[in-house]
Amino acid sequence: MRPLQQLTICSAVNEAIIRWTGGLLSAGGVHSGKVSAVMGTLENQIETWVKGEIKLEEAMREFERRYITMMLRETGWNRSMAARRLGIHRNTLINKVKTHNLG
Image (cartoon, rainbow, N blue to C red; front, side, top):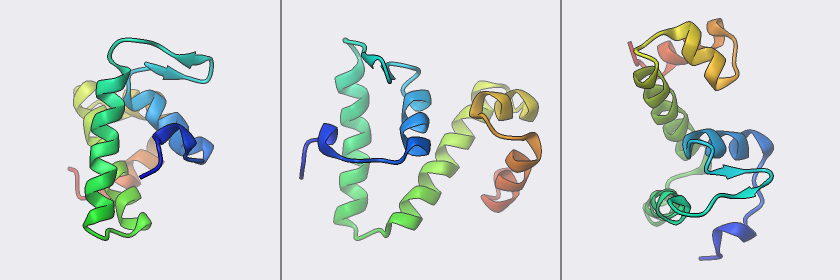
């Protein structure tokens, strides 16, 4: 498996990773400390999906479901606040919650 820094990812995924890591990773550089553990966890999850022959579309759907769930928990299930923090419209979040059967 290639090192993570060699992967090319779209800006939306990059932004999601920055948010998912709590800003530990940013366009301005990597903050030291917990980054290795966070990226190791993400890389382990991706490796699990690859070994399980999970298609990219399914992996992205699962990432989105987990990310939205975690953001909703973080905001006390306040959908307006979660949508703002996710950078999406509240109606889009509501549709995604329905799509993923989150509540």
